[in-house]
Amino acid sequence: MILGIETSCDDTCAAVVGRDGSVRSNVVASQGLLHARYGGVVPEIASRHHLELIDAVIDDALERCGLTLDDIETIAVTRGPGLIGALLVGFSAAKAIAAARLLPLLPVDHLHGHVVAGTLGARPIETPYLCLVASGGHTFLARVDEPSSYRLLGQTIDDAAGEAFDKGARMLGLDYPGGPAIDRLAAQGDPGAFRFPRPLPGDGLDFSFSGLKTALLYRIRDLGSEAGRQSADLAASYQAAIIDVLVARVRAALARERLDKLAIGGGVAANSQLRRQIAELCDELDVRSWLPERSLCTDNAAMIAAVARFLAPIEYPDYLDLDASVHVALPPPAPVQTASS
Ligand code: KG4
Ligand code: ZN
Image 1 (tube, helix red, strand yellow):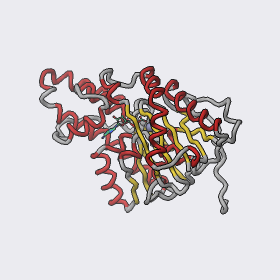
Image 2 (cartoon, helix red, strand yellow; image 1 turned 30 degrees about the vertical axis):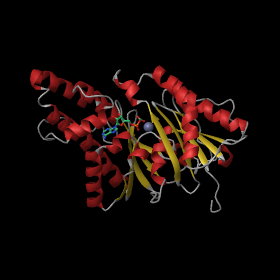
Image 3 (cartoon, rainbow, N blue to C red; image 1 turned 45 degrees about the vertical axis):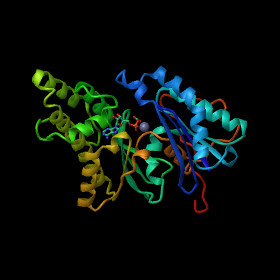
Image 4 (cartoon, rainbow, N blue to C red; image 1 turned 90 degrees about the horizontal axis):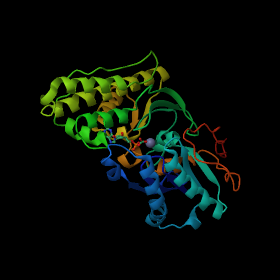
């Protein structure tokens, strides 16, 4: 049994995952409402709340599957990237529990967690596959030949897709987090009402969303007092531009890499329009898609624990002087040795 801990942003998360990939529990204490009135995550507030919640969330994750710390063999914890104060809370808690019980510890790259979330559950994705991760802090495409690592094929050169949703929502006067708010409002609007750019920078697989955000700003300014009345059409048209770009890059990456399996992850993977268009694309190309349930798309600790199925943890006491890191530039730990490897 692996205990996963994740505190890289504003959700306090703990989960228990079996070596077979079964998710025994997956607890997320969301601080979303606390940050809503500031229109975004306030790092200091996030760390203070992680500190208050972390013990209770870990206890809850164990209780929900009827286990205790005695049943845990490995602890996996997000090392980065993320907000340093927030990361430190989860990382310190994980080190303390592991050290007190002489357990091995695996420091995990948060992005690797999103990439392998699809390997969890009853119908796991099999390698090789393409993975699109679109969240509030990151947007990238990765090729996964073995779940112990991933290769970046392209990434955003400015804002993340979730950031484009959040900032666009703010301009439209919607609440934080903006993604779900735009998703809901867009359902009542016409995606063809306004024409927004579909930026595809360079000839590779990178993304860029900052120009699109500026285009929305100008459009709202030009509409003046009319903007409020047309907010559903604006939301639908703006969302369509973001989704079209994501889907276009997925199409290009599947072709370039000759892959026939696709997983999507990150908070934006919960978007109803993205899910619809990805499902249509996969039908058209005969690609098997793995569209995770929402609890495995947004930040969670089950995906962090999932990484520990594929990488060897660090034994006690060698991890004691390790710390969380804003960037994860760690040399990756060694893959787990299996009978066949
Ligand atoms: O993966 P996540 O929970 O945290 C990060 O690692 O960032 O992603 C959060 C992001 C936010 O930007 C939020 O607005 C976006 O995911 N999001 C959505 C939807 N639900 C969450 N974006 C579009 N449509 C949604 N339904
Ligand atoms: Zn994330």
